[in-house]
Length: 106
Image 1: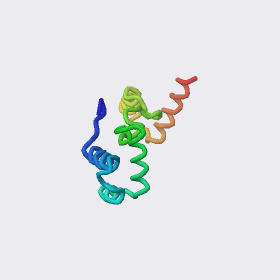
Image 2: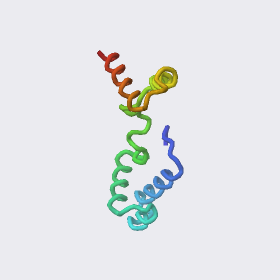
Image 3: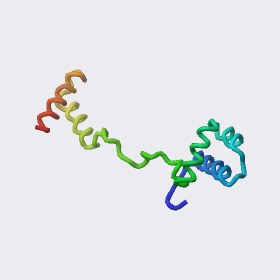
């Protein structure tokens, strides 16, 4: 597997599906071993035959979420609260942060 790292559980799943692909096991044994339904086992077998070991890696692995807040911005928000707005409730403070954010965007 070139450049693909799988954890132990995914390696076990890969080996079982490889065995199924090479006709070393039947579908019932493989599904029972993996704790999957026969339908899901067929689905993973088809995906394995199509793209190989990558079938066991989630498609979003390594991608940054679109709604992730940058670490520097988080630190600024926390320090602003601790230094200037420490006596505000979180709701009031968040409203101020939203106003600041709107002012920065426009």
